[in-house]
Image (cartoon, rainbow, N blue to C red; front, side):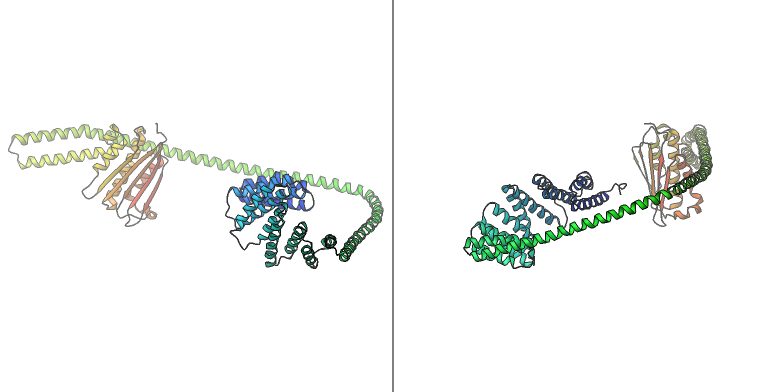
Length: 554
């Protein structure tokens, strides 16, 4: 799982190492358990940012040191567990229960260290958590910790009252073991108060329970004998003293039986060892006779394996050579295709450049030649009209002449607008939109940060694209409004032309041969751009174009 760098994987790996450390601890191999926790599990839990896992790892470390009677280390790691959980409240269903158990464990450690003030502080924290859960079974652990702390303070009466609460709670949930434990703790408090009669009755009640193990029966029989002695009941004192010795003898007999069984096992093991040695000698002799044959088999097998490896290598090498040759051929064809595309773009650029140059020449000739002569002719006609009686023939001639001049100027503008050559792209586009306005069609032009440093060829290409899109909308869409939006962001130029006309189906685009879309696509490809068309019948059309100005200079 190490190859997956994910929080969830870190958390799973940490949990696995936690369980491995638990196995080592159960095998009394505390050193390896501590190494795994400190060097591997805890760093992974930190990477996963798993607060619950980190807290449980710290608590487990504290438990290991607690069992080794290293209370200082135990307090250090249990304290870290508490700080980890307290640092940020987690939305975990067992968060409060985990924190409460950590508090009570820390109270127990502090009590054994005689840090009674600190133990009291954390016991109060535990109580604050329990107040929100009045029916929690963890009150059993709380009463045990609080009663033990009161005993440390020598407040024996308070301790007895708390142990009674614990007994009632344990009986409510049928926890027999906890009931016995509370009664034995209460017995110690009664003994300290020298209330021997109550202590005797309580201990008799405990010893009558079958759940009490033999070891506890032996120890508390001795305590009961001492209690009867304090009460002056020497008969029962002797009785429980004899019971204590009888139970001690029983345990000793069990211990002796175990020791005898161990001795017998060792004896049998010794005999088995001798038999094993004999069999081992026979085995060695058999091995000596078969070693030469086995060596021959091994040598033959190694030679066969080497030959197999050489064969596999030659086959793979042959396949690799064929694959390399095939890849070279593919690369060659790809380069050839790229050169063809590049050549086509160069031809297209040359054609468009030539077309624009010819347009410029024709526009100049129309404007400077025929345009000038028509203007002069109009002035002469007007002069004649002003000096005569303004006959209707001359007026019609003058009007036709004016319309011819306007149409000539429009043709010259379409071929190559002077504003583009003199004032730049933005004003040329604005002038284009203004000149194409109709009585029934409004053209709205918007520009944003269009630079004047765009190369002349690119300006012409952009102008032609916008011009073609507007002309298409005017001719085919039957719209009443056209919005033209042009913006620039460094070397990226964006064009949006939107109309509210009848629209069309983009999937049937090939059918619309008269839209001039082929010229638009060619110009877009020339600037390595992208063309996106959004249109539906009766819903208008939107052309979105992105152009890459590779020749743009800031």
